[in-house]
Length: 203
Image (cartoon, rainbow, N blue to C red):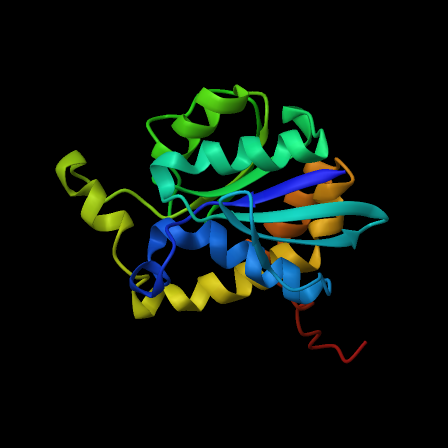
């Protein structure tokens, strides 16, 4: 069993924020793979489904970002899920906007949601990191993450979320490299091959 956690802040005021890309990703995955309806539990919203033959519990904490670990710990404890079988989907300012990375373990890099999860279950969980870019000034970070995605960013945001949902089975199966290869092809399509030169001899 895998616990898939999307990070974000609850409420309509935050729904389109860059900080809420984890919620957005979970919503698309749940719809694409026909999970059960969300219901309130574990200080959040949760539902269940199956991807690539594995049972998945999806969770969107309703505790606000800096208390996310409370909800994650409650769900993981109830289902007896080890931290290594927890996948957290979150925004990442240290990745360029539109970039994506999978990571296993490591620090929280100052992300308040990850900091809270570390405090409750340790740091051995997996992460799917969506790059949202850095505003260039640390004093502008809060304003950057708590603003909605710009209109221009929609060009990569929705297609990327769809691609993640399409290939999510690879991630569920532990094939992080295969998943990233599929997404790399999507994020940077191969250049078209050069057409053969014209042959003036008619051969």
